[in-house]
Length: 284
Image (cartoon, rainbow, N blue to C red):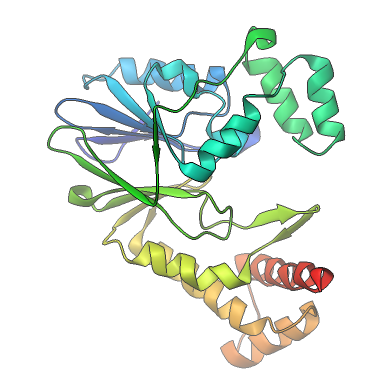
């Protein structure tokens, strides 16, 4: 079932148990645009079936927010023009060289090229895997792009991100709505989850340039401006408390500066930011 945000914006909620991110639909007077292609053929088909129940213009475009498998493996199903930034395009080209038979998938897992969960999703939700091949994008943009769906403008921009360096966001100005993909999330390097501390403030700056009231993230419920403000404030407070590779010192500094103990996500943020310091130290 689709959630309706407005007369022209719908979204399918994330399903983290099945590694399914939020999928978005923006409708103009002439065309509709989908945000992210789904993690599999079946995910995309489930979304398409829901769209068929709506009286909306045909899907003309599919924007891929970044080249992580759960956001693009279903993109062929829409029969629409795929839109990506240049870096995402390069990474999708790598995936176009992959084979999807069981033996190849197991080899990719053993080589840490894909996760075991990714392999399971591909095996169960992509039929005819032996002949599966990702379509080539129809539009590859640099920096930013504007798409007019017919009295409905969508603004695409590649932003700085703590999650991946090919993150694209989609902003609908007259709705004050922004689809962020996974851009505000942490990432994983050499099996260590971390927040890229040097990109934290630039990312927040890029996102806050947009006058948005509704924020849709890849693996969250929809957030309003106050919730995003709190999220960013927590991240910033945690970042200011992380000066080195010691989690104990980070927690102690946080407690002194905030005059309270870290709670909820703050403990995760502190650990992730410390992990980033550890990874940076390993490079030196």
